[in-house]
Length: 100
Length: 100
Image (cartoon, rainbow over all chains, first blue to last red; front, side):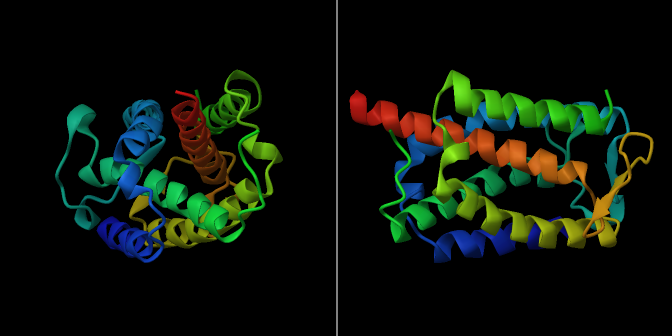
């Protein structure tokens, strides 16, 4: 089940606590525009049959554009997990500078 | 457009934002590639779970049907574009916070 994966990533996020959740505004601003574009892509892909979901293995709750709830969670959880990952790397390797 | 075309386009757009439009230059940073490697490992795991159990199914007309860990290779491009876009935006916002 997709929800299993969602729970799996959330555990990772709690474990890696690197201050991403403390910067909620920056996190939201970083994710929102990208998630919007990818959700639009998701809508296009679903309506053109690029991919489809097994109805027996999803919750069956649909958000806007007839996209399963799990997809919305995906576009929230995966970016947060990505941010936590790079911040974890930066915390461990402070000399690997990112900003110029 | 096919999933293949969309995935390649998304990667090119994400690279353009990182290298030229926002000049975050993440693609030139070790921290990005280490973080991406970690993310990729987890992506392969979740991709395998979701596709091998047929939770998500792909139309063979829209992909080139080269599969890695049961999932279409396009998924890796999709994931790369998503991760790079979110991280580019995150770093860009961090820099402007410091300046402002």
